[in-house]
Image: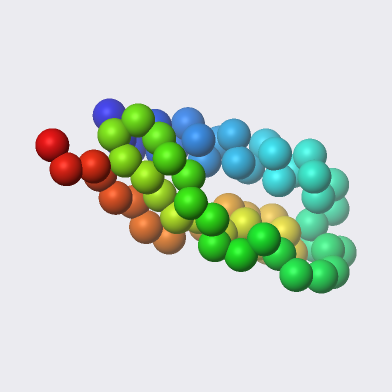
Length: 65
């Protein structure tokens, strides 16, 4: 379940980044850095690199049950 929630939120992040940076390869400047996203069942850390046109998932952590 957690993996499905992370995939869903990651898809949203990719769409948002694509809308914000229409041509990411020409992006100049500092990015947002590592960010935290909360999803049902846990959280994950992600990094959006506009120049690579990628969202990297760095760590996924489940809440203790």
